[in-house]
Image (tube, rainbow over all chains, first blue to last red; front, side, top):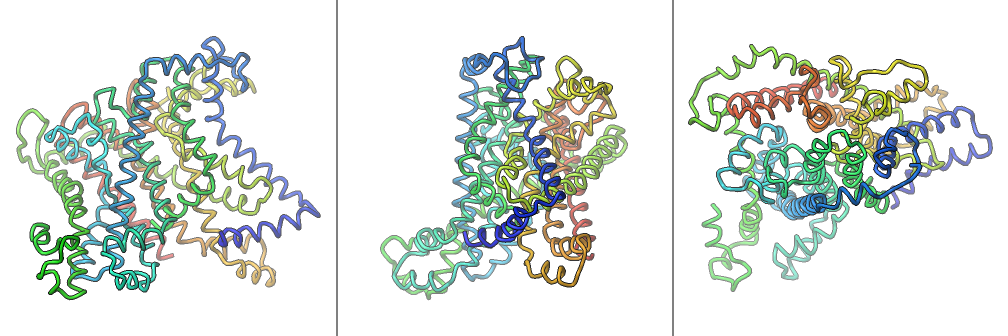
Length: 290
Length: 312
């Protein structure tokens, strides 16, 4: 809150100045920025617009459809596949997100607040996994999933991401800022170490927890290559993989493809509009500290 | 390891005499390893073992049908004699060498200007940030539609409308890669912009005020105060976005589904080659060797960038 107030202060100053005498340079800069912003959302806007057009109007590039129709949505949603994929993505992203919030913060806390031999080794070992790209691991993971019968299952999609070095590192950074006195006081009160972590330490780092949650959820919601590899049963596709296979099937029916893409985008759009500041701050926090 | 811990601890149960005899510090050590037990198993089984396994597989001829046989450096020799690999190698670095500077310059300019704007600041930031939240696999299809020939494609319609020649985009071996790259740059800008803005806000205003009092020009402030103080942010974004471009996959796969990586391999990045070798040809040993090469490329590029940027 306060950080934000401080940060916007200079902008406010210049705005006050420019309100009296709007410098032409600033007006031009603003206009260019605005046009750039509009260009940025053009693909999204035309995707939504085309999803509301009948197949006969697709070539009519008017932004506002002449006769808007929800027919494409009815058609695309009719066989229930999209709802299924949506559900799968939701389950997967939520589960992985919860697992990361729990384990990454537990490990981050342990590495930040306990002193024991081997702590540094464990930290370096976990951090070193950041160097290895997931693409290098997909072949062994695939073989593992095949041998254990995890192909075409939620667990198969989820297991590689249940904990991440990135999240652990992020949480460790934040737990280091928690004063030891708080933890000692709780220890004297007789709380178990688990309770000290969960009831005392975790509530003190909620901004970091929410940043981790947003980043993990978003990452898994849009994840493509691993779900593509591990699932062959269409009922277990996640939304991105589903969209991809649906679009191949739809061939040149662009209005259907745009409807599918819109269905994948609209929920994120709504969540973003509601939680905009929160999400941007979370992404910045995770990006900078992680 | 967790076995004998379980024997010692159970601190939630009735305190055993053995547990009571431990000092506070010893109890904490037990707790620490208890907390780490499941994660350690996870990292060993899901990260370390597969890393070693991928390296081992890269020296075998395994293809899912016959048992793996050690073949030494044969996969690597085959790879370095494969003209497709060198094409893919060039493509992968083209994504990096064009994508990283272009996206960083655009995002810095936008962040730098947006930082000074107050009128509709939130709205403009949202416009730039929104693409970052979209699903690459879905939006790749929107871009693909934009790139279609005249009656269909948005961009070609605009071009012909203003009297410019229509472009083949994804159908041309020279235009396809930049077309795919544009969609990847577009998707990443929002993240880079908000990170740059956070970096700009972290620069204390006193530096600017002092410079203004000393009569330093706007350009001087930019090159002698803003950019040097922004260095940690720049280093982070250079490394982060380079890794992203070197690992590009979602956009290429979805924009070229009829001939993945085409036309004529002109858009194929290394990750797509790995995917095809492993999951279309099931030549696991050969694919593993490609993943090791990808690993080495990422490692080298990151280290070189950190070296150069940190020293300056």
